[in-house]
Image 1 (cartoon, rainbow, N blue to C red):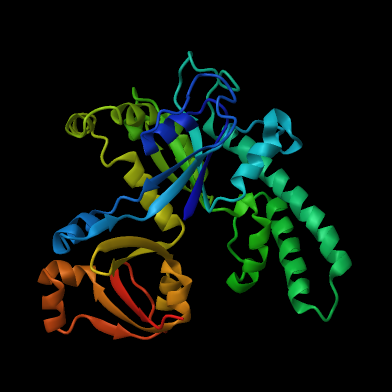
Image 2: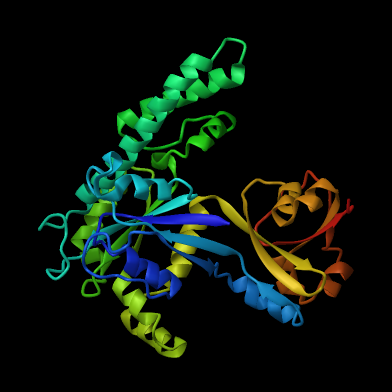
Amino acid sequence: MLKVGIIGLPNVGKSTFFNALTGLCVPAENFPFCTVDPNVSIVPVPDERLAKLSDYFPEAKITPETLEFIDIAGLIEGSHLGEGLGNQFLSNIRGVNAILHVVRCFENSNIPHIDAKILPTRDIQIVENELKQSDLEIIDRNLNKLKKQVSSRDLKLKTELEMLEKAKEVLESGFFSDKGFEPEKYELLAKYQILSFKPTIYIANISEKNLDLNNNTFYINLQNYCSGKNRDIVAISAKIESELTEFPKDEAASFRDELNLGEYALSKVIKESHNLLKLLTFFTFVGGNEVRAWSLSNGKSIIDAAAKIHTDMADGFIKGQVMKFRDLEKFGSEVELRNAGLVKTEGKEYIVEDGDIINIIFKEH
């Protein structure tokens, strides 16, 4: 399951944003370290195609892909040294696949901040410096170990050492990106869980009083800052989104139209997260009684898809039967697709595409 960590300074709206995503009412009081243990929620990934699939397979249970959100307590300057329980908080981030970095883009005298002046770029730099310093400590510690272990005959360990040295060089340059690393070599760094290299989206938490992004100076400054960085931005009023989760769906939709909010926060963030992690969605129709959605990295084969479902399917793989959601939508039924020759039999080399509906034929052990 994909895990996404929500981070940021204290009092930037992380827990309120978490509430908006999950509909849960976790504490969100106006004081630092309200969230000490990370709040975790597993939520369904919204996909309009699932509703249509339920029409084509009315007897089947519909099971969406899920995403785990982890609301991590506020980081402060010195977190990598243990300030404000910082080491504990940083360790909570290491296991996530991606990071949502909530940045305060609103003024409110009733909600204290680290400085009287709201400055999103400064806040980002404080948090990212803590991540970098924590990463450098881990890298230095492991570099010392590897230098004692490496030998000219152990090419894998030698390459791992080179990759760690390159990672240190990149971090010290101040530009956090894993671009430039050869993918097969970069995998050697996976076990170190380098926080600064994790895919990240900035969540610009804007005021409900200033929803016009063209006139929101905080958001504009954040956009300018990100223009030269490998980061995406999603603007959300966490307060409004959280409050709307308490309304009946019809009323909430009406308010959204009035405020011109567009799609729900969850849908927007999920789509951006999927794009960020280069994920696609495929579907399975299991035993005629369950339609299920799965996430898979772009460029993966049908064997990888089979392993995602169950390792036995990958081990005993014989063939896959594949139909496209767009074809099913056009022809209206699996029977019509088969009559049109659009249910294809694919071997293990087949590369899965977004919207594939896959039936794995395998030999049981």
